[in-house]
Image (cartoon, rainbow, N blue to C red; front, side, top):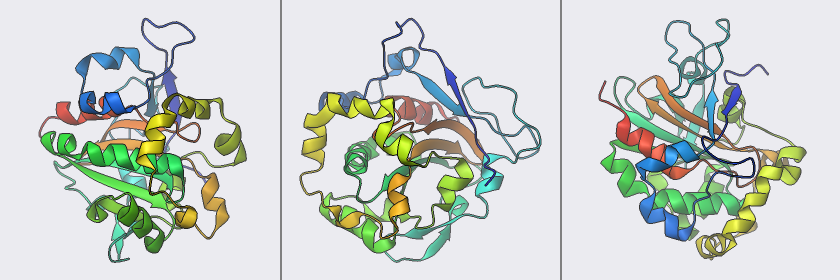
Length: 259
């Protein structure tokens, strides 16, 4: 399937070859909005079309292919299921397309312990999102009943949680999928640096959230920030637990000007 997104990388500024993006740890959560960390992080950007209706990401990226659709346009046909009701909702109707700021967090699936960790960090950061005028939208692979397991046991705000059983949003955005990325990616090794926090965040974890269609467990996630139809920030997980730095995401939210 042709996707609307491609990945580009920028090198770390002022860091050696062995440097890595700092993972969110317990001590880091209160300081997620630190402004000085951007120059120390590895950044990734989705390349979007320069055609009408598409907007370039904040970070520099290669010249986009003018024949590819914009990210907003590509998401126009994607619906997700509200965790609380099971109702189908067009993804692009979840925030104001003229001026609303939205953080769209794509979890792997509701039975992934690393996604429970990420959901815990997102929940702890919701006050900061709200201060930045951003709406949090968390999406996971699976059915609404699987999403409710995470919402109930973590717990996580059910009004901010959505299910994508057919992985439509992930496919459109070109998120990684497969055995190699899931089990063998070097990017997954960073989870060992934050095992204490993962243990704390997943004390109520259960495998019951795993999707019945096991191809879903091979899905990787990502993170996007929109202002209206404009894509401000994007991240594609290269491996299991390779989450976007939340201080970068929050920095973009706080900087997003009113449309």
